[in-house]
Picture 1 (tube, helix red, strand yellow):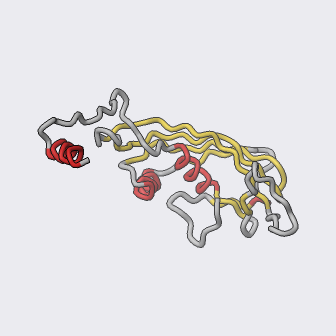
Picture 2 (tube, helix red, strand yellow):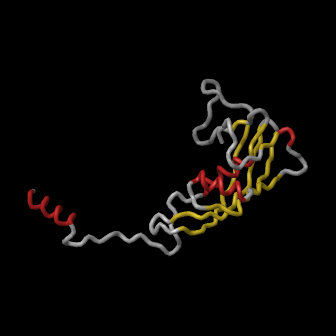
Picture 3 (cartoon, one colour):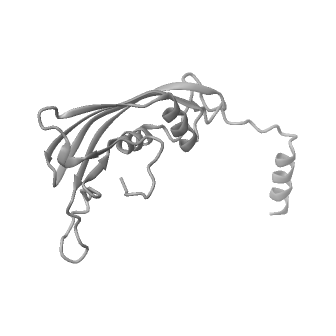
Length: 170
């Protein structure tokens, strides 16, 4: 999650020093207005029942957020161009830290991600929910039961005639 000057359509900022230690979890439940704004941002017809069930552990200097983001999304099939509903369930695991590694001094293993920053003592669990929903979306959605059928070229089609002319020239 990168820090932004403006919050997205789903924003639930929390001060890390005020997160309750006795209740190590929270449910982010998006409103219909937030779901509609996110759907427009993601370029899909609709999102409904968006819920982030998040838990935290660690210290205010290094916080680990885990959980699950679930939703029902309406996407457009890339084969038939028909809208259809799909369930999304994306696991969440993200680390926030108030210490950001410097390029020269700290060596960050390329296999692991650098922690996301805690900005002014705050993290936005709404943005976490939205980002993990985006990660769970199928980039090439296909409606169940729809198979890609390649177009069989007619021997008298313009492309077939051009191909035969090209072969005759060679």
